[in-house]
Image (cartoon, rainbow, N blue to C red; front, side, top):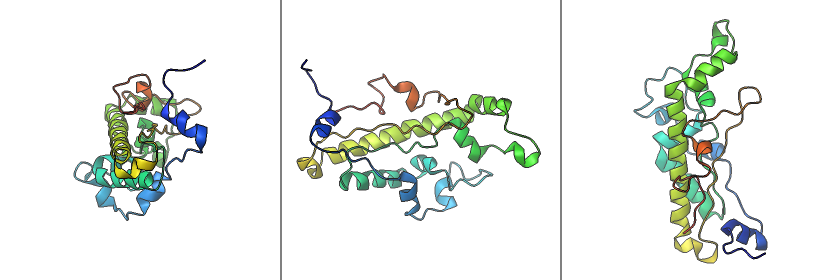
Amino acid sequence: MTRAHQHPLEKILESRIAIIDGAMGTTIRTYGMTEADIRGERFKNSTKGLLNNGDLFSLTKPEMIGDIHRRFLEAGADIIETNTFGATSITQSEFFVDDPREHGGRKDPEFYQKIIEDPFLGTLASEINEKSARQCREWADRVGNSSIATTRENSRPVPGVPAPARAGNKKERVPGGAHSHKNRSDHPTVMRYP
């Protein structure tokens, strides 16, 4: 059976191994960012440390995240991933919600239900997913259309990076996040080609 259109990634894989980008979190650390850098104006009054929340850099230092995407692409990556490893309300709660265990409590199902339903955390997770997907797609297209791409496939897949499940074995659903847009061709996390 012959297909009318072959996915560009399938075309690459017919002739060679596809190369995926490197470790985003490790690369972020090489930029020497500080607590003040990640906080920016928006999060300057946060009461907990944010420096280990690399996903926030998509919002507070988008030029750095873009530079990382550019560097991976120029180094030969065929696939670049979004900066969304912790872009869920549960993971973001680690940075914005007091841990009840510090006060003799525990993280029970009620705690996690409140986190999942928290409007600030849900909106933040959604915003990180959206911004990261757009940044990643933008750089994949920029480098794909540049002179660097003349010897390689121009289009680059941009998969969303799902965060690990944090609450038991159930995966959190991020309202408006990358996971809810799998079949929408107008969403930036969907792989599209020129």
